[in-house]
Length: 136
Length: 449
Image (cartoon, rainbow over all chains, first blue to last red; front, side, top):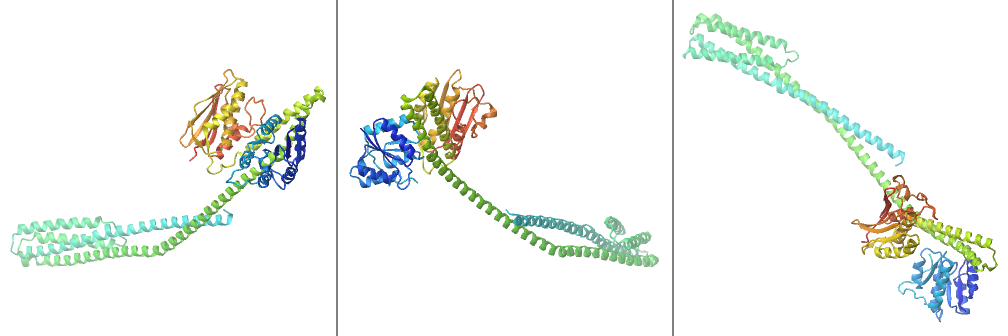
């Protein structure tokens, strides 16, 4: 039973997406920003993190950075960026994850990427020459 | 330029023109006066004096010759007579020359006295020559009269010479007076004109400087506006599109759990879903249009053939479903000055339009080709659709204008976005079409350095 951590400040979206994923048999936890997401990781490691970019307090790239800094396995958790941020691909490239989905997108398409990420489990590889910057 | 400096500029220009014009008029009049004075000296006084002096010499020589004639001085009387005739002719010529000179004010008595004394001299000369050569004392009566006439003629000639000399002096004095009167005026006007010219230059320089500053200001304002537009687009993307996704997910979720739903509810959900899809399309179009004016970041470049291949691959299934033949002609491998996303957006917009509008035609073909224009590459998308009437060809690229008979989703921002994007990247966009013979929509982008 795949375990998914959903980190998004849009509570309605997170709850609805969680319902969809739970219907598919996934175990889903929700965190409302980067710090809450890191706390959820301390509890247990999920198979996949669905991460928004723009969030209050600690944003998505900031949380990805902390996952690397705190390592001990956190750095190997695959990240799927789900965001309406305009330069989504550029952020995905900086974090080094091959998985990203723009908001809004078709549910089927999003679920296909979720399945792919869960099957491949490619860990993020941040660009060495550039620090992972937060959303501007 | 505010009204104060503008008023001064007008005043300075008026002074400059008035000063220059007055100077020109003054100089012209002075030139005419000087020319007339010079003319009086050169063509009046001087030839008169020359003629008078010659006549004086002629009279004296005639006097000497007639003396010799009467006294019977040695020498051939015939030769002497010939000399006297020649002198008489010369005197007549010079008399006419003098009289032909323009009349001067107050020269009437002088001319009359000269005329009468010369006439008297000539008649006495004729009487003396009528005496036989060597008549001596027998002709003494005539000779006294000749001597007196010579003296009288001499005096008349001297007076006439003096008069002409006075005229020349007066003309020369006039020249001097004109020059002296003019000089201060010329200096004053010149100084005034130079000052006015300096003020004009200073005010014009200030105006140009201020216009430059204003242009800088508006450029900065425009850049600021572009930044604001970017920020606005970002906010719209996050704050409007994310909630739309929640709604979409909710509808999808309801569909997935449709075991509990009746047919009517399912149909309503389907309508809601397709409406949402359309709204998402509109918002995306608006966003793309809002961002299209942004300048490309420095150094950005994209390989044209790669993007054309990707776009062709993306639209191939769509064209196939619409029964449209999508042909890609050979595209050179070259770099252009824009990001891959921009080039994709430019080409996708045109290909999507072409497929949409060609769909009802008999022959359904869309051709993508490129042309090298030296500094830039032009990408053309040709279709076999109904074409665009000339009256609509310019309007097509305005925002919110849709093609004739447009039925599918869209709010008419596609071509406006293409033009906006192309121009922001230093290129252009346009269409050429003959109604009934398809259309060629194109955009151009400069090559990367």
